[in-house]
Image (cartoon, rainbow over all chains, first blue to last red; front, side, top):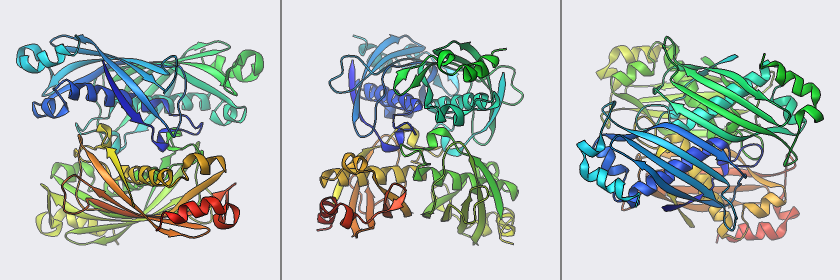
Length: 135
Length: 135
Length: 135
Length: 135
């Protein structure tokens, strides 16, 4: 599990003064890239190899709103790591809260040159790095 | 069903030259508000009443990328319209495509003054307007 | 002069319920690209040639706020069109207003492969198209 | 002078793989709010008083592009602090660079309840706090 601290930006909030629901996918992506980076297989490495974990499915739950100024902590878990597929689970926490204020699950397929790619076969070292994140 | 045409904006695209996945929730919101407007119960009316259809759950499927310049058509259906709850289904279509390039479902609860609100009881006329959208 | 109609998006507004000042550069870019397109030398053409009118200077004046729902009309003029440089002037108008609610000027240099490019020498036909926009 | 470190977000980059020019006003706002906060008169205080430093003029210079992943440091100076007006100067720096990659100036007027407000008269303590930032 990885924890990523994210500062809320003023324009992340909408007319109701709360963070707009379309901002959360950006936070989850930041958390996911932080997890990639901490696992030793960051965006730099996959990007140089022409590899992209393309988003295919995203489920978002919104429980309690958050506002500017402030920050949140996103907790991220790897839930699936197969040759062609990758899955993550996320929770957004405000300081001192008893429950997460939002949750999500995302599912990705590895794409290279516009085609699905089996990471385990094509790049076993990179795959092993991601696999270790599940432990 | 409502059809909403949306022009793709240049900064909607990311480094891969495709519309970033966090832009789609904005498109679905535009389509939802267009449906509200066309049904005669637009944002103006609910906002004046202090009513907000708060997003509680959003599921997004991404099938094929889209790019700038261009436009998409979002088709929107009301899938649920009860006193306290509202649900929508969406499809994103590119011109001439055989299949939608993305799909989504969203679920909302009516909120007024920070509390859940039964629209059917509190505002039967507004509720009747939304209810008609299901037919 | 080109006129471009732009629909205000709900998340374009900040906590004060007015369009955030960082959204205006996106509107000016949409208007600029619309002008390019209408002049016959749209993004498709310059992008295919590897040409980019890189933003080097942008001046923005904010006179009166605008809100969702609604739309604005951006009026755009070419103010400078030399071999290596391009300049534009913009006004944002609300319906029925006596004065523009915002104004801007932008200055660009033609860049190809990361280097400054003299459009008049390298692509005289494209240059002639832009030059005609000044008339 | 205040220094504010900002992490570049993946969707801040456009199709050219560089941070889009409309993102810089958001960075300058983050830096400005950080300066307010460090001076002891943060957004919380002015917001509670109904005060807003409304943006009236913004000048932006772009010298060299920046990309994801990475971060920048924004250096911010107060250049004007009168009863009704406030001005700032900004520089964006990449690590190890000899020159800033971008610069800006912003000008604001104090607004309360939709009208111009003389901060020095109405809130001398808050004004004194901002005034000290110039020293």
